[in-house]
Image 1: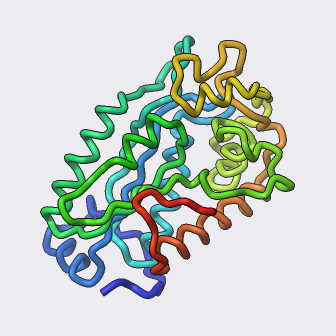
Image 2: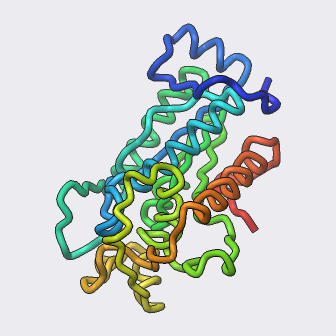
Image 3: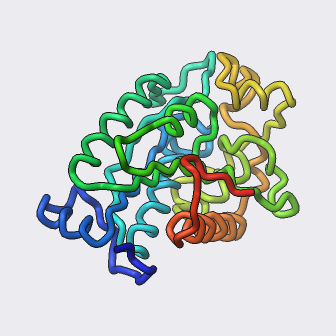
Length: 254
C-alpha cells in the first residue's frame, strides 16, 4: 500500500538499512527513488556535482515526505562533449549508463521493488535516452527530467536554453547550498540556436569552445529565484509522480 503523503523524519537511504528493514518498507510501499547525477563542469562558478546535488536534495525530501526508499546516488552520467579538458570531470557512454541502470534495476526488482522513479537534472539526449529506455521484467520505471517541466519565461530569461550552468542551475544551487557557488566568477554566454541543437543532440561540439564551460546567464541568478524554482519542481514531481497521477515511462509535463 502506497503512502498517502505523511511526512517522515528523514529520508530512507537503503545504504543505511538492513535487508530486513528494506523488506519491511517495500511491503507497504514497493517504490524506489534513484537519483542520477553527473560529474561535469558547469562553468567557473559552480561545482562539478551541480546536477547531482540538485537531484539528491529532491530525492531526500521526496523520500522523507512519502516514506519511499531512496537508492544510493548514481554520480556519473553522459556529459556534454567538449574539446577542452576540465579537471575532475568524468563521463560514461550512453551504453555504459544504460547497462549499469538495467543491471541495478534488475537487482532491485529481484529484491522486491515494483516501481522505480529515476530523477535526473541533465537534459542531453544521449543521457536521457540511456535512462528513459531502462526496462524491468515487471516493475514500472519512470524517468523524470526535472528541467522538462515548463517554466515561466517571465521569471527565467534562460527558459528554453539548456540548463547547463546558467540562470536556473545557478539559482537552484544558491538556494540549496549557496556556499558552493562562486557567483563573482559567473560568466554569461548566449548560445546560438545551432549551439542549443548541438547540445541537446549530444554533438561532439555540444559545449562551444568560446564558452566558459556553461551556457546561459548565471549573472541573472538569485537565491529567491532558486527557492521558487525548487519548490515549483518539487510540487510538480510530488503531485504528478507521487500523488497517484498516471504517468508514462518518461514523464512529460505539458
